[in-house]
Length: 168
Image 1 (cartoon, rainbow, N blue to C red):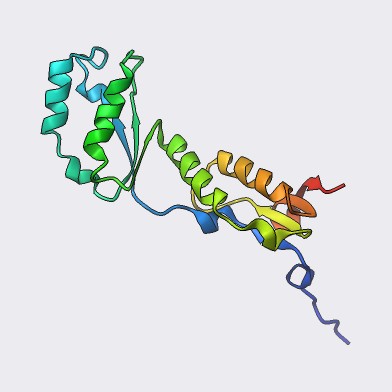
Image 2 (tube, one colour):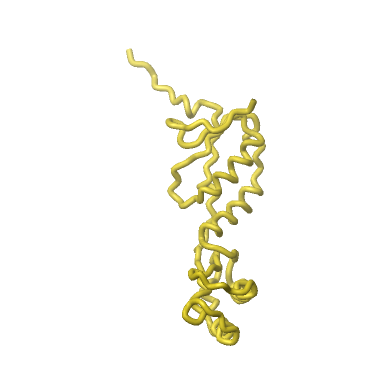
């Protein structure tokens, strides 16, 4: 007589919150200001403005853009703002920083729009091990939102979850 195998995870009230489900699609591009600086460090205003004017900004059509400087150059604030003026008509989103900063901002926006009431007083697994490059900062944002409503929160997979929070 064989016993029926029961999937306890599938039958539980456990809710899975998977950040990968909210991954913002789109081409991510970094624009390095240093390429328009003299020897990568010195901003010559006339040359800088001319270089920006002659750059093909249409190549960033629909892109998610991070504007940064890869050198230790001290550049005035208006330089990155001016780059943004040129790229904004083409880009879907522009941020100051690197690609990680870009993903953090995108997740901040997305996760602030979610209705977390479906997780009210339920045990939740904040799913780890994603196939997409979800930044660690997104997990920090998610846990803060989930903690307000969930009964308990674990991290990982159902078979090997690490307990993080339990409502008192």
